[in-house]
Figure (cartoon, rainbow, N blue to C red):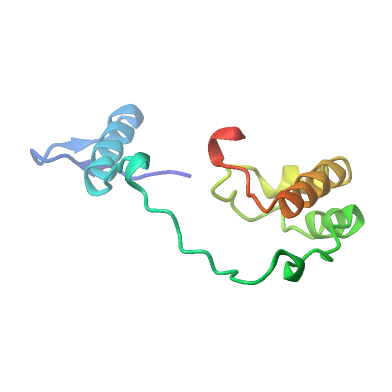
Length: 118
């Protein structure tokens, strides 16, 4: 992807790739806030029923996961995880079983792995 020349805050035209990257980084870091994760409130539980009423019969099938991964369009951009759809499509068969185990375990223990554990 090519980014055209940019003006800095002094009105100077920036054409060097490194200078443009630093200018964009400074801008985006100024408009987003970094919040402390210690102050994040716990969500209210949606499930208020008995543990016998939980969704326990969800089938996590590696074949279905492989089919979904193989159907990804390789010409699309990577998502928040920065994984290329092309890569996911190519390794869909190898990735399906480990993903199915992670999904199944997540459902069994009623916990989604946090980003820091990845």
